[in-house]
Length: 162
Image (cartoon, rainbow, N blue to C red):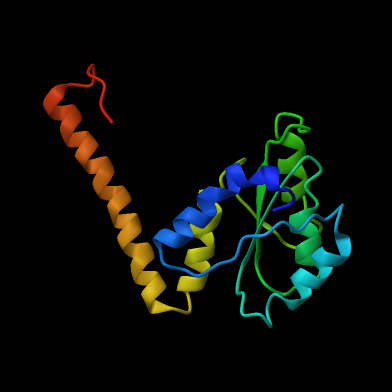
């Protein structure tokens, strides 16, 4: 993440990766305040065993794109609505509008959980154990919805339900 203030949003990515039992690291790498650290981190990520990078940033949100420019690993960008943000649109557009040749997969504003799930899905293409965990997770989402449908049929849509 670009700043420790992003941790409140980025925590969800770590939580879902923990739930899937996928080892990961969490750190602060600022594109603007620590550019040399960012370049070194991204360039050495693959040799350290990383397979996907999730990069969250707010405001100008250059971190995901700059990381993607110096690594061949897939980079997933999480736009963050920060204190200096313009309703998060600046972050969304900074991450989304990458030039051809430097792709960054982009999730919704503050959607680091989705970034964690997407990273797991990418890893699951080469790891059957992770793929099975993702399949079970997606099945649980389906089951939750079906349970709510049944509850709504039984109790009526007028009643609040979780």
